[in-house]
Length: 221
Ligand code: C5P
Image 1 (cartoon, rainbow, N blue to C red):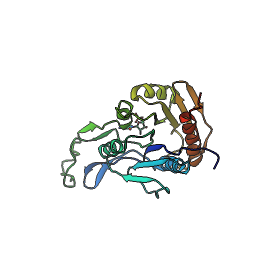
Image 2 (image 1 turned 30 degrees about the vertical axis):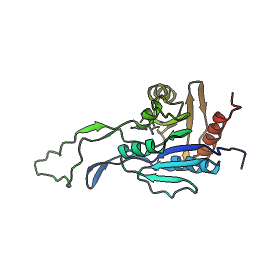
Image 3 (image 1 turned 135 degrees about the vertical axis):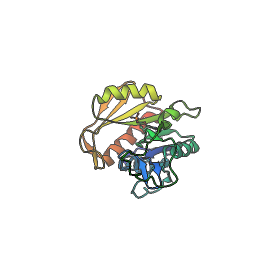
Image 4 (image 1 turned 90 degrees about the vertical axis):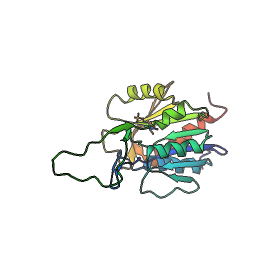
């Protein structure tokens, strides 16, 4: 509508949490509604991109005109993301669980009367963003998200380098961003920081897609 075009581009997006099973009825997860990632997928599709959205367990309708792949765990998310390559742009919005249980129990864990909780052994999950950052088919533009409660820009700069990403969209989650409809973000790149005021998640999505289109445009300086 306002001239933003991502026609011919493939945009790969992750959204939502992952669920890492402890037993058939319990799991480890981060808090994430998936709203921001779904809004970005919708904005990208509206700009004419081919969009693949890899979604963790969320309660959200699929935006029009996109391909949605539902996954449960971080490892499933990684497989789905790698299978969707190549992509021109990847925007990793998902709040991936950093750890999973070393092996999930087949049966529901029971209290055994001893007062001692069942021990949980955790192992680290693959880092999907960092995997893409060092991938043979690395997307041209790789964008990560970072939920921070303090030293937002500083942590985001460190994350850029560590994960091999081009931009980190840092949001301050010390307020009530989680599950809400508004977000305050700072776009951190090697060239500086673009701090946006608080705005609805739909508008953050729209502005981010404009910035992506700008960065991909051959006239960008
Ligand atoms: O290190 P941290 O979890 O704060 O980094 C957040 C960014 O990394 C997000 O873009 C998130 O989607 C991505 N991430 C990932 N795989 C993980 C952990 C985080 O892709 N295992």
